[in-house]
Image 1 (tube, rainbow, N blue to C red):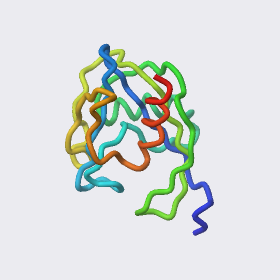
Image 2: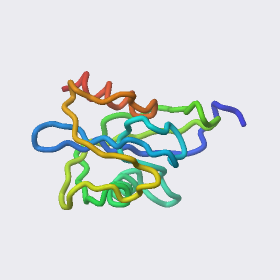
Image 3: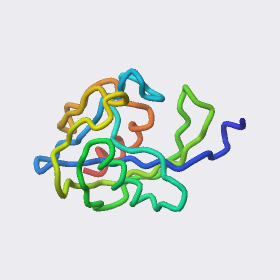
Image 4: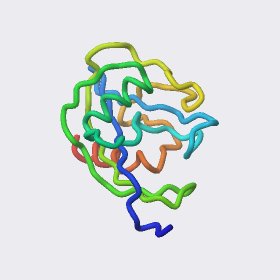
Length: 139
């Protein structure tokens, strides 16, 4: 497969709490890629779905919350070391409308936590780094 071929569209959700902390998830041992790293909630945009709808769905599926999308933060291409696929990644800034974040897919997620922008955990997933950099530059 040509690594420059776009094979899909993915979304990330940068969720903020009232104190400006960012919600991150530590990828579990059975996650498809970047196991053990910290990432934004998100996933693949399904056929016939808008990126915004995918972000709302992924937040519900992964952490059990309903979110309101505030704005698009970033768009970038991402090729993960474990894959030869190139993904168009769209990241949205969102706030929780209802629910408390909890691990809904324990096979994929080992831990979740709220982090101050100046105290992020390590390592940060490759697919999440550009979005966090963009957010930190703009705030």
